[in-house]
Image (cartoon, rainbow, N blue to C red; front, side, top):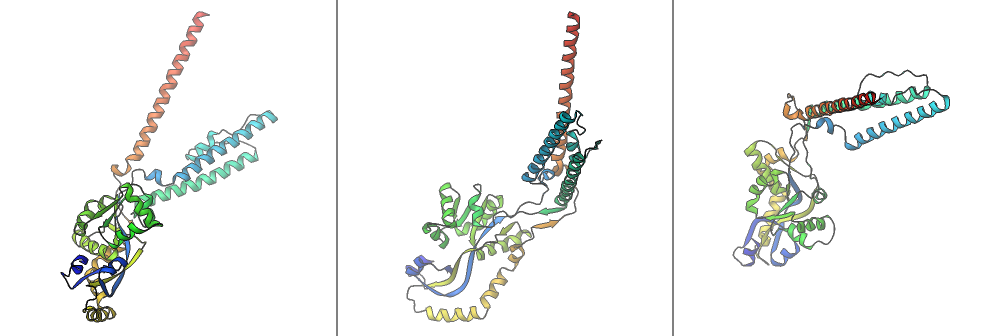
Length: 354
């Protein structure tokens, strides 16, 4: 459109364009129509139950802290019991396996008169009770409440994840800004282009690229919100659901205006019409009506409650752990039997020699 104005093939362009310094050197801008911000368009996460939910209920740091606490507690009890046995000539009354059995919710029997042993065991039982209750309630909520992830909410998120590629329109104000910026988060975004993580496309390929690449989850589209509303409206009307999301972060605002030839005599007349339409609220009204369905997908819920039966596809991880436990136990039993047989055979040979 700018090329047609410069070549005098058109008098003005109706489609709003972002105001930039370089463009203002070649064409004139009419009065502003609206201000739009850049947003990130990405694919929402799935609502399926993760088969490893029973492990992911606690974070890795929580599992590690629990394991370290168990080891420290057992080592402390064993050390004190050893000291007591050496000083007072009595055997330790607390077995270190008691604490592990308590964590696994198995029965425990402790017969001791030592106050410190009772105190430590009581503290450990209280901690185990809290951990087990939190684990069971969180696991129940994971099966009943599905959290839909929306991972890329800022440009920093896109830069930090080396697996994601950002998609931009060719020859836009955003690309012009990326090519000239020298620092900040946009400079970091521009640097990802050297890693092959920036893809520029033609505007007419927008819908196809979103459906083919963004829907996979490893690509995101970065554009003004108005452009995204157009796609969200079409996608919602076609599929009836919200497969994509728009980021909460807004960045790089641009003023959008109609454009004219440089020093065009039509500028003042067009500006009068634009002022009447914008100040009367007609332009915002037209936009809301045109993209009414986009509101359904602009801020979709990220937490939903479901009532469904669990299937083997969702719980196979639990059975895998159970079978692995059986396999390890049987292997240990066979090793013990083999070791016992070897020891018995050696004893028999020694007796025969004697």
